[in-house]
Image 1 (cartoon, rainbow, N blue to C red):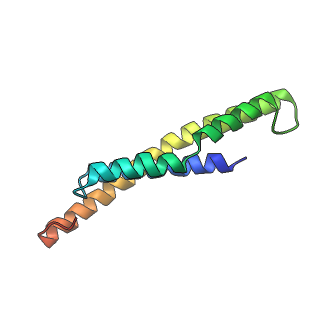
Image 2: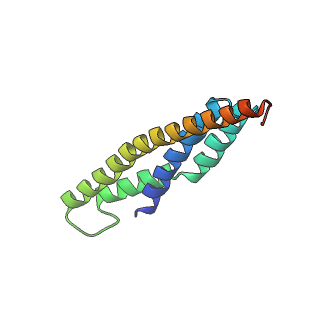
Length: 116
């Protein structure tokens, strides 16, 4: 049950990292790499459809046995936790990507050349 949530949270962090890192211009093929890694890799890595299906099954009581109100609460926690956690992790990934991009560009300037 937790696997889609964990994968989606990791994907949110990675997507934030990738998009922010390549926006800083660390690589001459940044726009293409951002699309390949962001849309291609992260799109295939995350499991949004599985997350939605899991939430729907929890809300209808088809996955676990328990009181309907308890299952609806669990579905709400899973959905809300994934969305809020993904939002926070995307921002954390963006901060890491900006820091990595600045560090890379500073090293490139010190070296006096095009390191990409």
